Image (cartoon, rainbow, N blue to C red; front, side, top):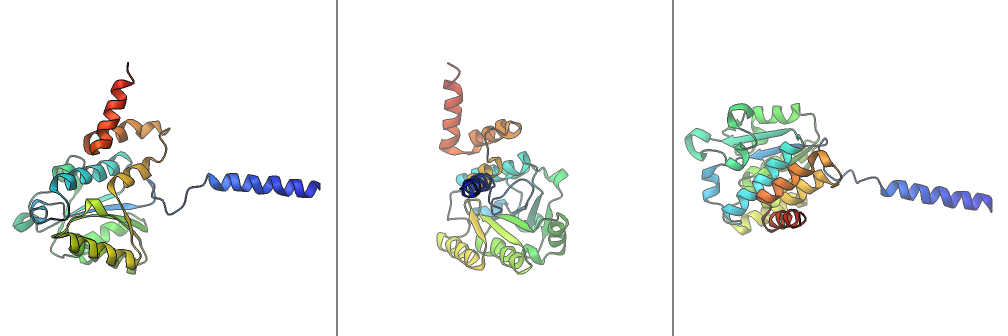
Amino acid sequence: MKKLILSSILALTSLCCFAQKPSPALLNPTNHTLVLIDYQSQMAFATKNITIELLRSNTGLVAGASKIFNIPTIVTTVAAKSFSGPVFPEVTDFYPQATSNFLDRTTMNSWEDANVYKAIGAKGKKTIVLGGLWTSVCIVGPALSAINDGYTVYFITDACGDVSKEAHDQAVTRMVQAGAHPITSMQYLLELQRDWARSETYKATTDLVKKYGGAYGIGIQYAQEMMKH
């Protein structure tokens, strides 16, 4: 009987401890590299699956989250001076071009650019998170290539855009079928914060949501103001 009771206690203890351990499939501030791909004016002009206003806000959430949590981050451009133009201010606000070493290239698939490939490898992370324009070209290319090279790949669906809803949706399907994991911009931020008791990033996270988080951000602003009374 004593052995049965002891076994039951150990089983419950093990279950309790196990419940406290998060899944390794969750993103955290130390297990991945973020790659922001071609958030440039010319690429945005033809984007139709999402409004430019929402795309910019979601991009701000992602770039801001990576800065708050010190995520190793790479910003790429394509033909910046000859065709695609400047990077979104929602990126450069957090990663100024003068100090962030944007990697400009000619290849549509950034994985085929030697400098980008080397920069990703130098971060030493086997998980990467992708966001950018366009989904069916500049996100599919590195996503499938990275998976082929043994990386775990996540991509932020609502911080990606394409020339049509169908082009975006089919690209998402293709990447998922290949083993990539779709997430959203708000999910990315909150998955990194994970616990509101983490006071060192609480204010920066809620401030970011107030700026770029739409209705959720307004809700936070309202709650903080009304709780003063």
